[in-house]
Amino acid sequence: MFRLRYLTLLLFSLLLSAAHAETTFDCPASKDYQRVHRIGGYLVQMLPGPKKTPYRCRGTITPPKGLRVTVAKEFALSIDEISGNDINGGGTPDVVFDAFTGGEQCCYLYWIVSLKKKPEVIREIRNQVPLVFRKRPDGGTEIRTGEGSFDLFFLPHSASVLPQLVFRLDGDQLVDISSEYREEYDQQIAKARSELSAADLEKFRQSRYNQKMFSDQLMTVKRVLTIVLNYLYSGREPQAWQALDEMWPPSDKERVRGLILERQARGLLAHTAAAQSK
Image (cartoon, rainbow, N blue to C red; front, side, top):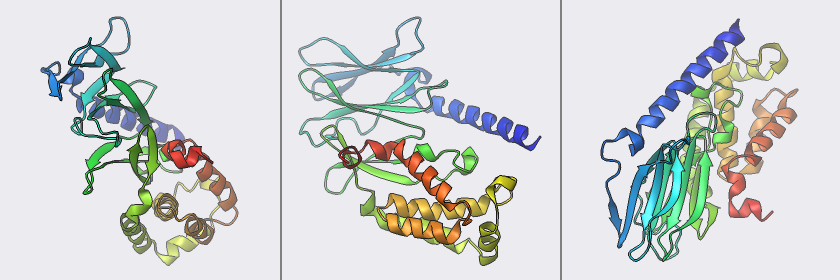
């Protein structure tokens, strides 16, 4: 009965999240989504998607002396506010199309398009949570998101610990710069430690996963994972495994370490230039 209720609540929360996500995209929600955006002589526009396909929207770019090209198509679409800036350091303006996939192919998809003589998609990024593009003080652009592969990792969707990731785009390569923001990770680690009592930690360490799946200690699980994953994703792997050794039930820690590495291997971090060169 408990498992059935949990799955029902989980499905309901995912449906609500999907409905909310769809309304945040201009196409097809906004009445004027087809208006033309002019960037350096290029015409950037969203149009209805091809008929009899699941794609309700498509993103197009028309060069100053060329034909209109479709570079993106999805269930819901927007032109990111960062568009018009040099995203990848290539010396020319870029356009970013943000998309929500809907359905089973969850969830967020981004096309970064270079405004060359012939517009070219230089990078496509998919994640379970949204990306945020920000200008850096040095004039470059950083990309922030959470590691979506940790959704539902020991915790329900609404409580999942998704460690922060910060990237920059160098050409067509994602470069992880998360370690430049260790202070932000340390704030989350300190908060989790302050909320973790000695009694709760001792009770958790004496638990066995195969008894209640830690379902009676979800807040403790969340705080421990917050500490471990924030060390790991800020470039401090030894401290991450030390925290796991000290806080996780001894009978289960090797299994969990393997699961963390497995989730990491199918997340966004695995698509960075450093990870792919290993």
